[in-house]
Image (cartoon, rainbow, N blue to C red; front, side, top):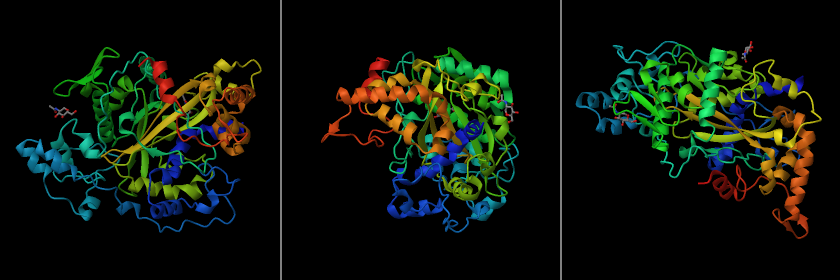
Length: 507
Ligand SMILES: *[C@@H]1O[C@H](CO)[C@@H](O)[C@H](O)[C@H]1NC(C)=O
Ligand SMILES: *[C@@H]1O[C@H](CO)[C@@H](O)[C@H](O)[C@H]1NC(C)=O
């Protein structure tokens, strides 16, 4: 069925939607923004028409589209911004011998080009001729930094603040409602909030166990790594553990020599060097990670490692080893129209500018991983007459994208969060927004989301909630006119969300 086919690659499709949407959200100057939009072959005037299709999903398919004006970038000789400035800071606390290495001279561009760390082979820190990562660090420098270097200094993204009064038994994810109308008015993407890169909440223990079980059952389909990804996997694992220790100091800690990770939520201790870094993550961090690395031969980015348990209809083994443009095969128009811009974005993305966004869909129950033949597939092809509203959920995939400083790998991190749709009842304007999308959303967009199978329940329910909110004054009626449905100022939340969130968590 067509609908299913379209939704198959949606998580990866979002990868590009993220980038597409990033233009205004990153608070670029007008000129930069024009240049950025130019790269995506989107002319601003198209955004003004009321009937404009949602930009994110149908970027440019009018007949008069011209090829992008930006001249081609030579990816092989283009690198992301160097992070070598961090070395001077790291050198301050290093031993005398290491300080000498960390304060060495900067390699020339040619040297970088001629001595790259290969994407397909494991790195050797004892190489006689040092090899360089795309962000400009040599194997000798990486060795001198040791394990768990200060990634906040290296990346330019601060460590999170400790989360005071946090209770893991009752913690809820923030109530993301990234529901927009109309799409062209408000971009959905913002700078990542450093405190919220990874989020622990009440389902933590259950999710870790669920993910471990999925790995036991499906192996490489949910977790895999190719040769050459050793450095980026170690770097990601160390960054995640550092983040957890800083954010939730009462629940996570590293031994003084950084060899063991203590997890008080699971009551477990991990000998970090005893297993692959992605397994350390699988056992402790219930989030999905897809890692792409720069290939020194063509400067393009390839999916080289990852652990992904919340994919619907695709899995790690379907995509591993592929270049970005080949990952997105089912995203309409991707190859012709988008891959140019996306490759460019990845080539240049700095470590200092992680980004975040949410996308949403509606589901029956809470399907996390959906291999072919999963019973959930059948649910999507019919409108079950006896479907109960209590069994309908908003699924939000909350996503971040960041470049890691040492390996220069780009990590796409996402987690699926489920909220019963009956929660919308007391969330001002949310029912009306959902309704607007379901009734008037562009056909291709809604098919992409795959909402048809629940619409017979959710449309009448949202109509009821929206009416109720007008009746009890939650939704304001001004000059006798009802509120015109539009993306909320509080997006991706809603008015009063903090009060509700604190009340529900009890802290
Ligand atoms: C352990 O890691 C921390 C950062 O997480 C670092 O500051 C410290 O120097 C490391 N200790 C050792 C012995 O490597
Ligand atoms: C993973 O993807 C492959 C290739 O598309 C497919 O053959 C396999 O059945 C999938 N398995 C799961 C568990 O999703």
